[in-house]
Amino acid sequence: MLSDRSRPVIEATLPVVADNIPEIARRFYGHMFAAHPELFDGIFNRGNQAEGTQQVALAGSVAAFASALVKTPEQLPEQLLSRVAHKHVSLGIKPEQYDVVHEHLFWAIVDVLGDAVTPEVAAAWDEVYWLMAYALINQERGLYSARGVRPDTVWRDWEVAERVQETDDVVTFRVKRIGDRLVKTSLPGQYVSVKVPMPDGVHQPRQYSLTRADDGEHRQFSVKRVHGGGKPDGEVSNHLCEQVQVGDTLTLSVPFGDVVLDDSGRPVVFVSAGIGVTPMAGMLSHLVVAGSKLPVTVLHAAADEQSFALRQQVLDDVRALDGATMHVWYENGGESTLPVDGVHSGVMDLDVASLPEGAAYYLCGPLPFMKAVRSSLIDRGVSPHDIQYEVFGPDLWAADLLAEPAPGAA
Ligand SMILES: Cc1cc2nc3c(=O)[nH]c(=O)nc-3n(C[C@H](O)[C@H](O)[C@H](O)COP(=O)(O)OP(=O)(O)OC[C@H]3O[C@@H](n4cnc5c(N)ncnc54)[C@H](O)[C@@H]3O)c2cc1C
Ligand code: HEM
Image (cartoon, rainbow, N blue to C red; front, side, top):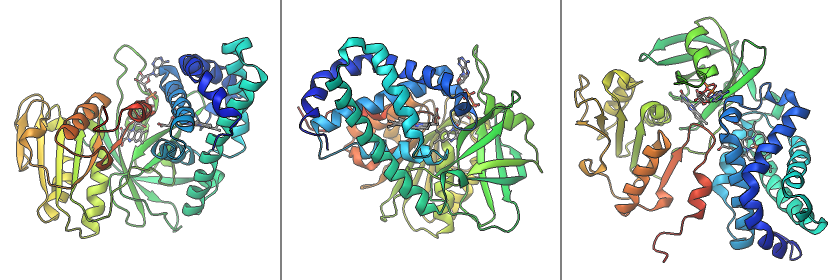
């Protein structure tokens, strides 16, 4: 809770800080990486820095948190904090690093806002920072402890046991534990961070959703090569798809991620596009292993059947579940050799699918796709509470959704 002394100061300065926070975030990262270049080695994602997406996500999260502290203190943005905490622990972030971020963030605030940062203003924002930091540190401590790891023991080496060229651009890796150590379990829908050495010697981490349920010995994930299209090609995805072979060693974090299957017994609807199929494949695989009787609907959109990664695995799992159905939409025409339940031409249209009452929805794919699906579900009366989504990058949507009026509000 924000103190009575700080609340009016935050209320008064929130608009100016919110307006300037993208610039504050940009200068903060520049200043921090100049002082701590080692943070790029195995911790920060330099692709997201180059694109500016991490700066926007950080700025959005701080503004959303500060705004919640003054407007709805009884309801802090749990979902946003939980996503950040899971991402942090998948990278082994330590509590003492919050002091480093604090130092450089406050340098940037003063650098951008200048004399407007009176001692009173600085103290009030300091309070916001530490409220947010401790909310994260405490959640992260709980996540590490639940997994039985510490920040410096989240990483494990695995041997690549199999690689499958799924499509022109997607490779599935099946990795096997080294030795007979106990493999930490994963929840359906979780991801691992994969850390690889790049040619310049710097290690770069990226997240990949697990695409199969645990068997106590393996993990499986699928990687889509990112083509630059005028910008640089994605460094980790291309490295994995082109360089990493059977027998090689890969370093993976233990699994984390807050978008996980609801086990309350409700029907489940998976809605994905492109490589967004990966968390859905993982959740389906868990349902099969658990012998689930839940009604399951799988809706997937792709350019065509050849570019639909994991299609055989997904269909086999759908067929292994009583009453599960699968519909596909192919932009390049509705042709399918797979015996799915519905093949449609063009972009996904939920009007042609029959959606079960009271279902839990899981979305994954490009942001515009997920925004369109979410709007269409809400138009059909689905509660926002029943829709979870996974973003394959810093979440630039969460802060916008928090600012959205509640359904039914004027
Ligand atoms: C929770 C989660 C789950 C995920 N699951 C999967 C999954 O199952 N499968 C999967 O394939 N992916 C998944 N991803 C995405 C994955 O983590 C990577 O983001 C993806 O593989 C791209 O990484 P990269 O290193 O190849 O690209 P990067 O090198 O990080 O590049 C990303 C973008 O930045 C641009 N860029 C890079 N450098 C510059 C520069 N200097 N100037 C301008 N632009 C630049 C690139 O052109 C590219 O468009 C997931 C992400 C998250 C967060
Ligand atoms: C109160 C302080 C902090 C806030 C508000 C914050 C906020 C965020 C947010 C919003 C994200 C993006 C999450 C997503 O959607 O993927 C993120 C990711 C990340 N954070 Fe933090 N963070 C804080 C502290 C720290 C600290 C102390 C470190 C360690 C130096 C750190 C390192 C990272 C890294 C490495 C990522 C992933 C970056 C990427 O993938 O581009 N953060 N953080």
